[in-house]
Image (cartoon, rainbow, N blue to C red; front, side, top):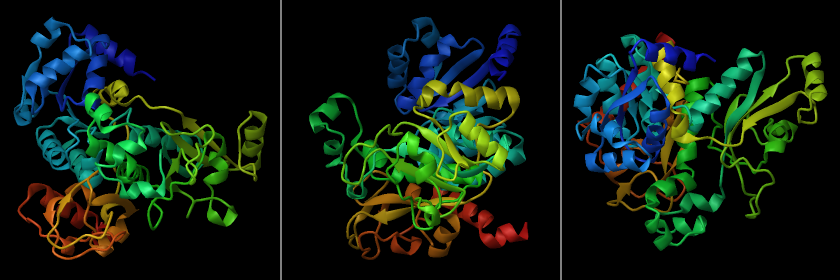
Length: 441
């Protein structure tokens, strides 16, 4: 609870925390909106494929012209990362391969990296975090996005002596959404294609939120950062409101929806028949925890916590998250404390491309949020056993054989370019965190 005080000291000393932002999209823009009201924090440069668009983003969020004039805008991320002024790199492109390259460049350059790009984190975050630690810099999940907020709640529970039963987030989910495509997505949001275009909404990105991919990616990040494990055959998305968390999120043997204690799970804001869940957690995050003794359980009752029937399990939750508006917490934690706001400590969860329909040999995969595959969360050991194709690389690859609907794809199903940099990083991560490698350590 001292980040602001530490930042004030840096500001008073004339040594602001200097940030290089890569990607001025929605998340980046939300972060930029907070910079003018955070003395001691300076974005000295922004890299974006459209530098003029990045300038306009700064105007749109309220930056004065003099601040824009003294900010460096470029389409060359590498030069910005290497600049001596850069203390913290914020990777907010959302592109997995670019995210890996930018993160490794930052680590090699001795710069802290805040990985807004959770797609890249799910693809090879455990390796990046290990490389950052070896280089003496911080690799961090992005505060304001749900994985870092969940990791914080898990840390709170464990630091106060509670065992964590489950942790995760809420979303809008029905089983049929797994088959959603960019052409059908807007009907599920109650929008027309014309309304979505007028709002500048990207159908493939919004489809990844709906079809289960984004949930899988974020829960992989949480599993890798906290030690909580995925269920063995994907997220269950049980319908659940805020008041029912400790009842629904308990082991199946006790009438709950969990495969095991210590699990990541995403709860749905919709009942399976489409009715809204009462007091849903669609925009929020949660942790379910367990009293270690009868005295603590009695305290739960005395202080009004809603519990499961045993009286031993309760939940804490945040109903909302503020995305990039909260990102300063990660940046300042890295620069001023040398600590991440959540970071991978192992390879426990993986997100595997899974067929939305029957796929035919010769078709070319269109990636996260596309028409052909969605990302299914699996335990990393199971993904490695199957040779699962990670969703972060399932773009632009030609199928070598038919794949039935609902089946997860493997490396052997696609034509690979083994010289591709992102492919090589991913394979290096698999080798480093394979069970045999872990046992040798």
